[in-house]
Image 1 (cartoon, rainbow, N blue to C red):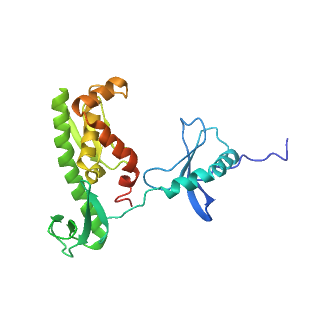
Image 2 (cartoon, rainbow, N blue to C red; image 1 turned 180 degrees about the horizontal axis):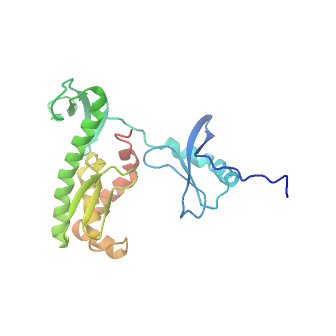
Image 3 (cartoon, helix red, strand yellow; image 1 turned 135 degrees about the vertical axis):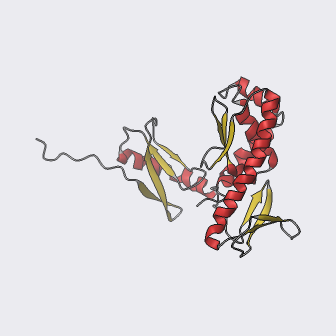
Length: 246
């Protein structure tokens, strides 16, 4: 019997690392399909250190510290979370709007366009205003995405079974082979050509359930200017995900 046997170091749920003189919290996860250690910054939330099932904590910790400079550079470009609070400025279809609480307990969100900056008038108590605005934005997103989905479905000759809004933290849309399409409601915050691109992308999956050359040709067939929306999401998608984050 080896009396000097050391137990394998336990993998923590989170850890901290010093970045530019400040401590940054890093979530630690084990992913069944991961083959190596990976550090990432999701669209919402802080850094995540992913370990493979066979990962050892000393190796993971060493990997994290080797990535300190990469993390410092990425955090400088990280999205700033913007809550749906009175006084905040958020985009709607690509145009900045100021959020103004009306103080009224009842009523619906209204648009005021006759002010210096377009305004979203949000009723309800302060604690409930973010939820009310989110619900209204989901309704607006559903209107826009249902319309654009129908347009692209007609162009490509496919049938859409349902269109639903979701709150994914890292995806803009998804499509099942049965014709059920899900979209991230935050697309209504982006310029309209961005939402149109995602609608075209998901509908095209009803023709090609992959990302092959044939798939991209299908997207271009229904939306020749697809690169405009695709490029915008690559450049601004992280910030878009940060609006309304809790």
